[in-house]
Amino acid sequence: MTKSPIGGNRTGRKLGQKVKKGKLKASSRRWLERHINDPYVQRAQLEGYRARAAFKLLEIDEKHKILSGARRIIDLGAAPGSWSQIAAKVTKSTDADPRVAAIDFLEMDPIPGVNFLQLDFLDPEAPERLKEGIGGEPDLVLSDMAAPTTGHRQTDHLRTMHLCEVAAYFAVDVLAEGGHFLAKTFQGGTERDLLNMLKQNFRQVVHVKPASSRAESVEMFLLAKGFKGRRAVEGEEAAEDAATE
Ligand SMILES: C[S@@+](CC[C@H](N)C(=O)[O-])C[C@H]1O[C@@H](n2cnc3c(N)ncnc32)[C@H](O)[C@@H]1O
Image (cartoon, rainbow, N blue to C red; front, side, top):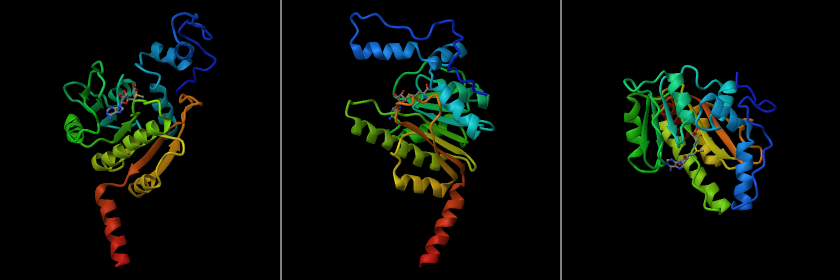
């Protein structure tokens, strides 16, 4: 079970620490204070995860059971690597038999069993190279991709939504039947066409906001469970076409 770190601090570091006023800008000081006082950051350090984001995936899994039984996983927007660490563990991936493929345009320190590709996911070569990276259909496609911020909120929002949409079409293209897709999105941001496409291809589509996703953040996750399989959906579409002709 994922224990909530709130109220408990097992790293030995005190919460509620202040950063001295000095050379830092007020906004940077606020960020640093929030970071060092964040119980999820402290717990990530304690448990050997590279990022507090690990707990978002673990909390979602606790409720929706997407990790158990996954044999191959693709991780989009993987750096610094906490989701890939979890993916490698659940798939028992090794360098000799890699079952996790991950991509980010930033560098990522190697993780045993993770085939990492440093490339923009929007590069036309990315889908094929990711597929090659695990030698079989994945049961789970994860995307924690967030577009680099420009300072213009609407632009940032649209760019991340675009990444979510491209990731969703990629998932439908590669997933094994029964597989799941989890992607970062924004509150109120998922386009109706994208939701319809996912509902057509998956048995269940829900939005989730894990406790470790900061309350003040508009971040949400879109979870599509139980991929119906490419042939099943093609069959449904053909039947619909025949009915309307
Ligand atoms: C929130 S971080 C991911 C954290 C990660 N899930 C973890 O557990 O460590 C989002 C990542 O998405 C990556 N990203 C954003 N756009 C991308 C793109 N077009 N292609 C590849 N990676 C991208 C960023 O570089 C960033 O490292």
